[in-house]
Length: 188
Image (cartoon, one colour):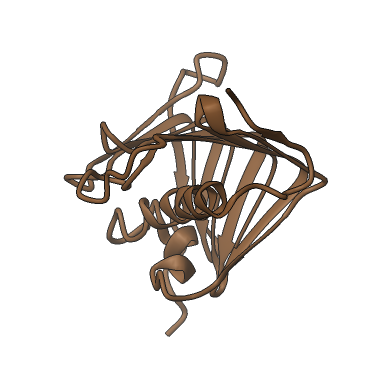
């Protein structure tokens, strides 16, 4: 039987799974690239001991299916990092898998303009998917990664969480089908 909750009154196990999922989304890309940090916007969440605060207009948990859906003005704050999106869906296993990548979290999907900011670092896209088992994160649609005045733009950013390798691909409809980067030297 599935349990469905629209107000956040989910059981302790569900709440723990949802919190772990949010932490997984926010922590996985941290520190993925060096000079132009692809995951720098997630950096404030690198301390998992920081509390995670989540606000949304609605929460629906279907425990029997292993899903939790936050909708409407979703805001996630941990440390100095803020993630905003319209919709955040978490897929989790109901069985404890603490030794697997991401624990019992299988996949996280954020959609409806995803924006993550920490200090002067920011990443935004139309969608973000983190596959915990495959250890891959994908930001798609109008991807913009910035740090200060330096900006990278493309259509799809794929990050291998195991190797920290990143691949930014262009949008087919841009002039010449190319990624775009503007790098501003620091003013030190």
